[in-house]
Image 1 (cartoon, rainbow, N blue to C red):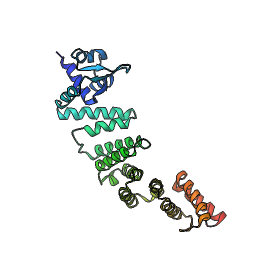
Image 2: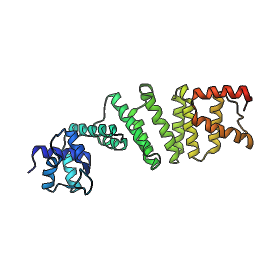
Image 3: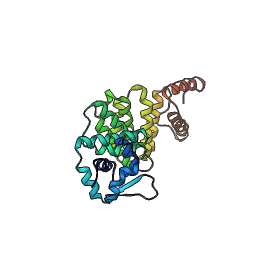
Image 4: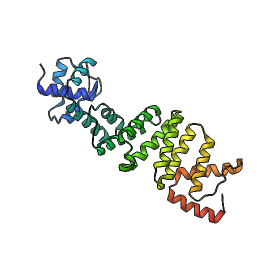
Length: 273
């Protein structure tokens, strides 16, 4: 028969997942004893097994065992534990693991600050999938935008800008042109003037991902013209290359302030581009 402490350990472990790290579960529960003591009851009853060559990692013997333990936990306690795991993984710079616990939390946070904090975790988690799976990254940014809400543009501008910028690019990377257009429009409308260049960079990258190189050049030309450069809207092939290459380099490597300084120097020493 399981002791009360052993049962509590298994319940918390069920929140961690089908496979779990016993040391993290003990830390969440603030159990100070040896880890073998915490898992002894579960091992003896055949409820969990040790994962070979994996340190303190264990798994439930059957998914049904984990499910019954998990579903038997009070929703408030379950929410508390999911939040504790999320915070721990976030502190360990593993947002992709933290976000899984946020998504499973049965209680939606009602405080605006808590929703913004969670939305930021979704953004950081999305970045970990940029190269490997942009579809997952897009899903995560969509969830982050939903969680943050429209008021985030006012209450948490940097998070809102980051979420919508990421969503714009991931939409394009996944070939979802309608979603890209919607995100790009939101960025143009809501971004502050000092972030205009950053928005242009996102849109240029997104257009390139969609295979719209001409539109990407047009966006770059508009961006540099707004910064004081003077580039023809429909350059020929030679002027096109002369404009496009430095445009890409300047937009990706420079800030608004440094671009303004370069624009002044270039226009005074070489005339118009």
